[in-house]
Length: 159
Image (cartoon, rainbow, N blue to C red; front, top):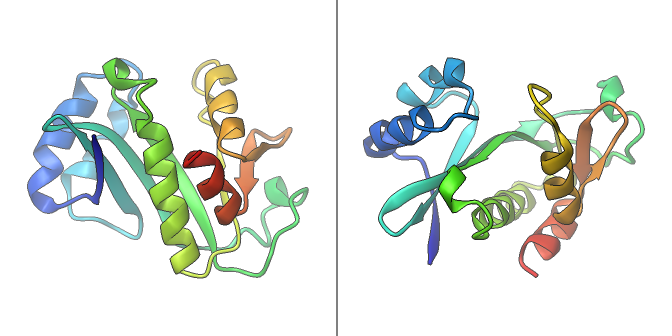
């Protein structure tokens, strides 16, 4: 059973240790999770007593003047920005990414967001990430930005 929670101060060390052990986790970003939160919200996924996933984003964003999102039919802001999602390598395929995305979409709806957007991490092959976001109901643009309506993402993630 996966449990999704907001990152608590007491969980920062365990999250850092999980991310340090992952080859495809950007090590230069570890400091972001070792200090008190900034404007982003961090959701963590617990499974079997371990942190197996992380989603970072904010529900206080505006894509209106961002050309990478000009091809999307944007509602008025606020918009939600999904900054990063990471699932422990050994836990992939267990629904953790979907559960994190579902919780983020639900929170985006609660905050009045009509759109969730983000950018594919282009540091390596984006094929798997593109497919993951498309399965969640997002549209991926030619700029490798992705976007969708929170209600559609929530419905896709909970199917």
